[in-house]
Length: 462
Image (cartoon, rainbow, N blue to C red; front, side, top):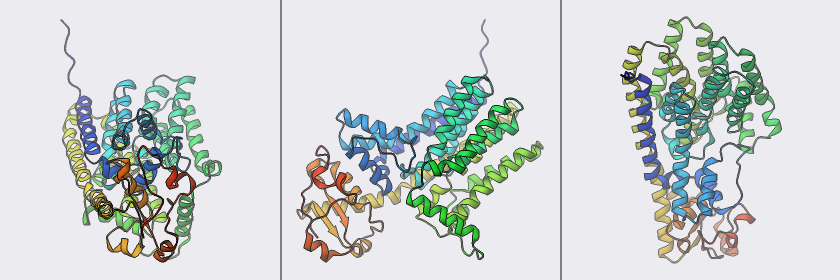
């Protein structure tokens, strides 16, 4: 008679991980318009639809999987609304794929559970900013952790080193701060495991060298260069004054919202477990990684950004807590792991609920653009240039992305319904010219738009 294997606690955690991703897929489908037609997302996804070649933003080469799926859908003749749905679902699918690989292929279930927790721990508004590449830092470093644990530590050898180096490259090429999160993972394993330290040292060295030379090989964009300058200015500043980044973090920990309250509670829990176990090197690494990352953002974003961008800055904190948390939970007695399932489910539920409610600001902007497009079409206008003061009065406070938002939103109905609204700081000038080209010059000129999705006249109404 074959004895039945007991239901292990990690299987229960994984079950709730599956349920969480199922909920995220549902939200991504329900709110696919809000997630894809929102400022930066609208700008990039418009290019995915309009252009045939693959677009790589700011040298972030490993952030292109959703774009490739959109290109595939375009090649199969799927309509615009379907392409937007693919883009929305694909971003959730990337993290879910890493969850599945960790849980079942590489047999690192606790790291897979960390993937599910990190997907929502520090996320609220950024669920509706899907092309913010920092979202990939919620799962790519945990893929690296799974490869280290399953290949480098269990099956040492040349192949394992190559596989781990490739996983590391994914992290390094997805975001400029990827090397910092990768270092936190690699150094954790170096301190926590006695074997294969030479290979880990090589990988740590690669991450460090990339941190120093990566921006030389791939020069930063204008936006990134401004951030480096801001960080340097903040470091040299003698009078710190009010800090927008710290105000955002603490304000959304308990005063304005409780988005980061579970993060703080879990961070203190990890620190408690490390101190209790007298794992002093790991405790120091954990404290330095959390404190150092917060300090970096305090220096770089002391003047502030939009709410979504401010939240984006703190996303990697989720990995810096989730990975050490489940690395320690894995070592606890079975009974304790079962009891800890209760707070895990509570945190996941609360954070998922916050993500769901955060759709309101994105939906409000989409509704504004939809009403604007409908009004223009009712008056027989397809291309409209509007003074910035009028846009501000109507609640459209981010102007530059309006051409892309309006084109995508109107194009969903059909190419003949396409409508483009553009900011017009000098209305008189445009009344004279009576023309408006999309603000990215030749590849986006009206007569070069993909007629399967957008059909616009050349004349503009001011």
